[in-house]
Length: 516
Image 1: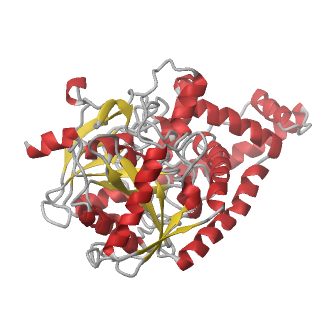
Image 2: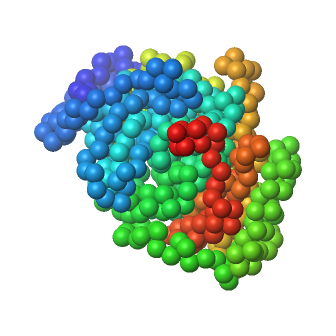
Image 3: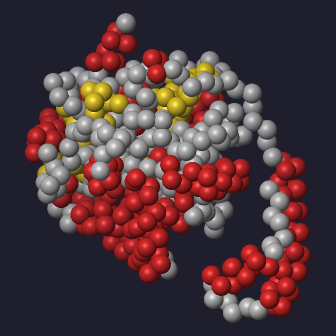
């Protein structure tokens, strides 16, 4: 994309915006200097164009409403490179913020609509290399900034347990498709709970891995320090196999210097939990004005049942658990504005792999379609622009500086306990608000469920949600949080509970599809 030499009117506007006090004769000199500097931009463009990949020829299509009952598919495709490997025989959906080369990507937003990536995200390459079959891109929320499923530009995504209710966000399509039995597993993304929220609302198992364990390369970011990719599945066996296939450094994500590789997360999953210490975090229950007492009681009872498998289960207080939401609010709001909105997804100051075409497509999209973004994104933009105008980024810096206090508190609790447990969400899935709902209701439904899930995005600890109740009512999830890089212990605990209850319940849609 050639950058033109600026005219004097443009330079005059820049000078006035930044109060540089430059006169036209001075601006003319700067204009000539800039013209010379732009030669490097042209040179780099030529270097990049010489190695730029071409998108593969892969067919895809938008499904009809009749074939997309939950609104959970964005596009359908059918990709499989090999028919052997640990994921052979399994089907997958890929959240639509993750690049599948040659297949359209929208990220739930009119801003990105029309973009077609040229390179597969690392997790996509790893699924295909392990024999998995990808059946399409799952719909997600508008630029992924919602914990419910009503902000997606293509329409609401519906819960297979009750289609009048949210499937959760922002990976609502991934959660719904797995829970409905349309695919075996799905890739999801998580910045404030977006793997765990749709998993809990839809009755799946979902894992937000340790920060950096699964490469984010090729996924549309929100904020580099809280971005995660991870698996959603219906059972612990599939989840462990899936994590094994996608985990480990790829050489392109600089957040992975300490990430282990070559671990089989299925090993030891049936070893039981006899002797493990489980701390039930008191501050995860009883959020005023939010927590559903029935859900709290179900999770407390589920944690207690782990004692039947030999674990020691105790209540523990971690006051900083309640602080984490406020830290996350600042980092996610100001950080997303700086990177995802001003930075057109990627921002700068990062040594990982970028997608220049996606950045420029997003830049054009903001100019052409900003008014079509969700009310939630408009709230984030207005709030962050206001705070940045007053603090210049100081608020984000303060949040980053107090972040280690949250980490230290969680680490201290995990020094005494092998895992920590609490409700994944304060309440079961709520009704999907109407498209013309008042702004305050629309935004509340999008963000109100995150007080427990946000904690592990602040700290980077692995966080597994498992369903602990379903059948007569809507699913309820319990979070199991562990030490960084200790996903295997979480999987052991999740597996132990799965065996205690005789397997996790299926949604009516999944029962009909899988039994048929």
